[in-house]
Length: 226
Image (cartoon, rainbow, N blue to C red; front, side):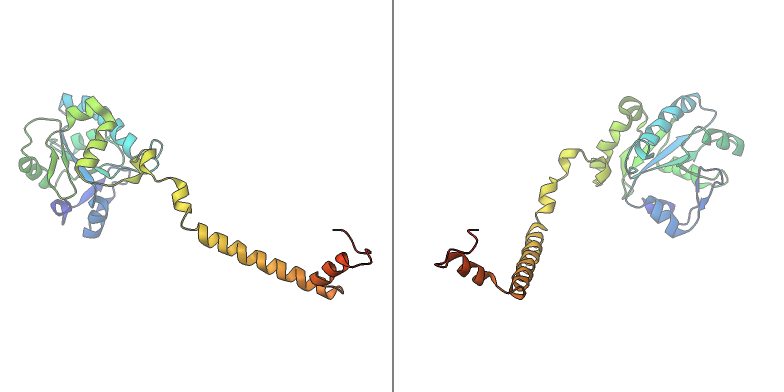
C-alpha cells in the first residue's frame, strides 16, 4: 500500500498544511496501517452529510481523548472537487489528522480510476499490503460506527494492543513469576548477611551464641531462662 504513494506528496490537514514529501516520511506514516481513501467533493450533498459521521468515526479511533493509543488507521482525502476553494472548504469538515492530495496533483483522478469509483462518497479501505479490504465502507461506517474497525483490524491481520479487551492480556501474576526466584534468592542472601553480622557483634561483646547457650543450661542456674 505504501508503494501507491512513493514519490507522491501527501499533505496534513492542519493549519500549516505540512507536506510529507520524502519517501521516509510517507513510509513512516502509512506502513503497517489500514488506509481509508475517501473519494468525495464539496458539491456532493451526500458527501457533506457523511463528513460529520466520518469525522466522529475517525476521532473516536485515533484521538487520545477516546483511546489510550491511536488505531493503526490513516484517512486520506482524494478530492474530486472542481476547484482549490472547494477542496479547502471540504477539508474543514474533515479531521485535522487526516491527509490529502493537493488539488494540482493529477494522481487524484488516477486513483479514482484505479479503484473504479462510480459514486460519491466512497471510502475504499486498503490492507497494509495494498489489497482492497472493502470497496466502499460508507454504509458500514454509518451502521456500525467505530465498532467496524475491529473487523478491519482482524481481516487485515493487524495487532494493536490498545484495542485488546482485558481477557486478551495475561494475568499479571504470570508476568511476576519470572522474577520470583531471583527475588527470593536476593532476600535469602540479605538475611544470611544480617545473621552473620549479628553473630559477629555478639562475639565482640564477650560471648558468642554458644556461650549464651552454655550459660543458660549450666548447673548453677544463674543464666537467663530465655
